[in-house]
Length: 287
Image (cartoon, rainbow, N blue to C red):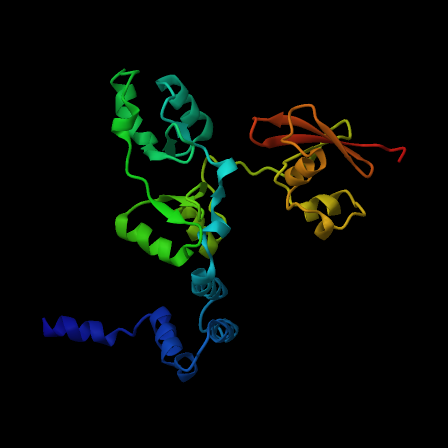
């Protein structure tokens, strides 16, 4: 038994643990008084090859996570994929197949009333058993509600503690303003996490006929730069192309609506009654 212990002691500790111990024993680390000092120290450690660049990046982002609110990283309400408590079985299954998500907030008669969370996997036993009709409310899991001002690091700890993955975000008036998942928080640390349902699409695509298809969520600055427009993005009271179109029309756009920006005609080609989902952009070459 002692020989085994002695044998283990003869092996030098791994380089990773040696560098980590040196890092945290450094007196400069102990004396740091602010977040900026710690991040500066991490950067210096990376420059000296005490830790690698990836570790430095993740550690720095983890430190700053405490200053990020869930409002900054949530999926806004207009982009939420939800299920209504009055939807029938076929509608629910179609929604799940179309979106490919694993969890869905279920809303009651009031659009700000969350009845619970439906897990797609909970429906599978019903389908396997060829039971095409089931009581939706009996299948729901509890919903987690958090204010939009909650810090991301605090929510991550709660997700770990109660083993949940999704939270509904509400504003100061108790109105639903979005949802946030554990993946949204982790992406703040390690960058974009793509799964098999994510589609990598350009926000502006040039078509064969010279027109352009665009995602209304493209940022104004990117839009103006792409088309070399003279307007100042900071002078526009909107953050996205969709917001610009709504401002120009003064009402919620519908399919077929057109706005003109300098030498561009922007036509709404897809909308669902709540938001624009795609536009077609053509140039007036004579302008």
